[in-house]
Length: 568
Image (cartoon, rainbow, N blue to C red):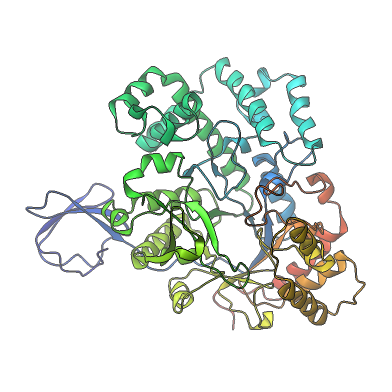
């Protein structure tokens, strides 16, 4: 990646806005931030020139907010899965009580067929969103075609104790097809579609191919396995109306997400990678390493290590491609939001590659061009006007947190992980008690999380869990027979001592839910990613525990109302 003042010799420079400059020696010192093209005499291939501010934009102010598994946050008007109208409702409720943001699970696209992939961290694409989250009644034209029976069937799915994404998607897809058939979407959609370019068309074509031939492109007829082949071009022409329909679903999803995020910043989550059978892997297959997946080596919380089943980009191929897959993924995820959380941010520095057929313990680290990737993150943060949080949990090599701090990424600090008093945590951080992969406060305090792991035949860290519970009791002033609600409030009083710029609480803790959303490695043993909140949003808004928890964090933020970065 070149920088202002670098010597490049004679070259033609085409700026992102189309302006052309002649460079005789060094790059001009006043180049605008952006993605520019450098052409040298004699070079067959132009060079991508990325001019970055180098640092991410910080939060505008200190704030607290809610971490939300959107699919679990159902209202009485949902169709079995929390949707973007529910996100809008949550944002209004949270803002009305002083919250400054919502942190949501990844909302990225999965294959548009059943069974629907339940894990938000195993997306088919990081460039597009899942239309499963659409509120059908809010789609333009829906009022004229939706009947009461369909709406009632959708809302009846809320009565299920576990999410049935397949039933929800079948019902929503049929309803959306009826809306589509009732009339053309109009010029606004066509202009949006044209502006999205080839990437949207390729994704929409993949969706139609997945409907015809299944969700795994590697099992498709040979002619369809490459997006640039003549068979795919013919297929797209032959199925143009259906390709247009899937583009329309993306337009609807983008519009509803923007509406939901208009009243309160929504921080979106960027997963580590993508489904090897999905759209992005199909589009960028030449840039991905074959026969390996990424994961994590063993640590004190998981001695066997983890294999996430996600294919990694080959570092030199990613660079040769001008980092386009990474740029597109970051930009799409940070768009129309109030921030970006990068899952396993250490992957910008190195990733644990695991050969096919090997155990997670038999992997090895492969280095990535962290400087270039962080420059891209900073540029996209600057353009979106949004802060970035790096999820730096687990095995973090020396120097990574320091580098992230220099680049303006917020660290991610958890009460369950940190040994220090929260008052000693860094200011440049998002502070939380737990995550979707770790025990809830109620699960830890009551022992139900340990009991579930034992029941599933897993090997929980018994000593570590007991020590964590004892620490919560000691530092939180809890009696042994305290109930889960008191444990929740004590945990968040401890968290409120942190000087971190962002304080985050989960809705699971706000309702004293004992089950965590996900137990890693237990997908076949329990309903990971399929547990709804125990009450609808209408009830959550009236309960005392969410109100009291929010008041604890609001008081901590209000006690220090100075603008971010200007506090003593």
